[in-house]
Length: 363
Image (cartoon, rainbow, N blue to C red; front, side):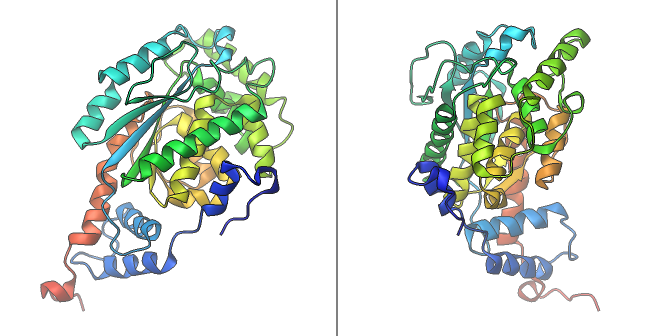
């Protein structure tokens, strides 16, 4: 069992980290053995065999239950760095898109409907006031972060509160979900994501900063300069959980913090969690620094065109299931990968073995 870091003792964050245990090696080994005995050449399902074994290890049983129903949690927040001109989109678009998702009109809704997944939006820091509904949870920590270009984006207390909000959401959804999926919404959140990637992986801002919603060259140059200023305040990569939370507070977003807790909560509940794109990848870096074992419960849905996302996944040792040049967020790429995860679990459960099917094996 993970050790509860003293800075978080007596907190929900500390209790959650302590509750995360490694995957079950016996169940994982049993899955590998069954995969090799199934009516197919050994290893012929490629990466899906790794997914099937991982799911068995997560569940502690072989075969693992199917990862359904799935639930998408879209963490929404605004960013003070918006004033630096890092995106041409007005800040009010965050609240408008939240309303669109709640109304069922976003891409995430269309993809989720086809897969039987539910979508919940979590307001952890939208600048505008929003009315809570059954599918919009009011968990606002503050109305947007401060400008990360000139100082800390939030306080340590606010960062931990947002992380613990994510834990609570994951715990609630895990009670009746077979898979959790990360989603996000927040204008300017790729700026904070790039800063987090640089701080946790050592990547340089020019390599980790992308065009986000499709910015032009002058805006990209300004965005890289902003990320550079923010990263310069973090002298070294964090090596302790306490330092990881401090970096999150310094340059991260409230939705990053919420997603960090969401990943930790999923791991503590022993439910697989599918990562979406760049924002989720940046949050996973924080979660891994807080509790490395939590990454055993994570699958990377895809790799986006944001360059920092690939850097984050490589640093975490996560292999993306899809590469479709997506850059939308919301949970869309992870949802598209969900059928692959379900197929891996279904194959492990349903495909006959050579002996049960009476099929002669190769000599």
